Length: 367
Image (cartoon, rainbow, N blue to C red; front, side, top):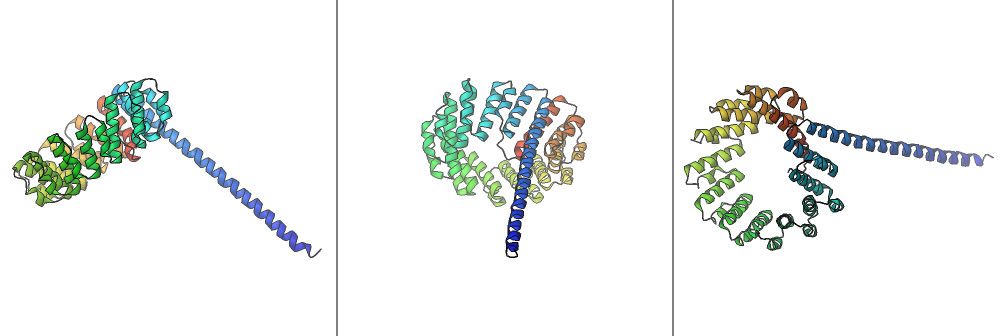
């Protein structure tokens, strides 16, 4: 009997361990279920809230565009059915299909216009040319080829379309491939191709390939801005373009001393305005004499700082309300649209921008 006692104790401990494990397992799975339901409920509430914001919009075009954005945020084709205008509805199908990559839904659409848009979205998302081939509209099909050529960095796809030059230029930019620029026949597109790659590579020697002097100096200015290099501006002969170059470099370097080098007052003040925004410093706006540029400066800083009180510095009522509409989206504060804005058009834009900001937050592609 005494020999059996240790065995009985061991069996009891084993059974107790199994029971404890079972209880823990059930609690964990229950918590997972509750969490899943909670997350699903949160997503549903968010969708309903965004749709309710769209419903507040009176202008039909803005409302349709708002629905399209909510559809993309929620990857929900059914919301596209709320849209009255065909162009916006097609845009909605395109946006959602990019996210969902669901070609089976495209097949259910009877009208070829939204069906083409849906195929294009799937094609771009999957980088699969076979979906472009399902499209009936030639312009849409060729645009689809071009988008996939860029996404896959495959210039041979450009040979399949009529507007080869633009396609080569876009692929060249994506690949950083100067050789592709040489294949371009139209001079203006070839110049743009050189300029894009020069800017990306921060290489002004590529600008020297551009024969048009005006375009070449634009190229120098863009490279100077990208490189944050004021010295490059000195290569520009035109005084006006040189000052534009100073303005651009001053903005990206957030350097007021560079703005001071600009002789043309409006360019100098525009430079102040952008530096004020980047530094989130409203006091810089006070250096500006031109009232239009000063007001724009106040708006930019208000938006950057999400501070509605800065809007009060504006002189015109409509400008104040526009300013409010810029601050509401990043704050996600609907009360600003509802309580501080009386102009219906600005209020509609405010509601829409609050919804659109949700795409920005989630890193989804904007229309």
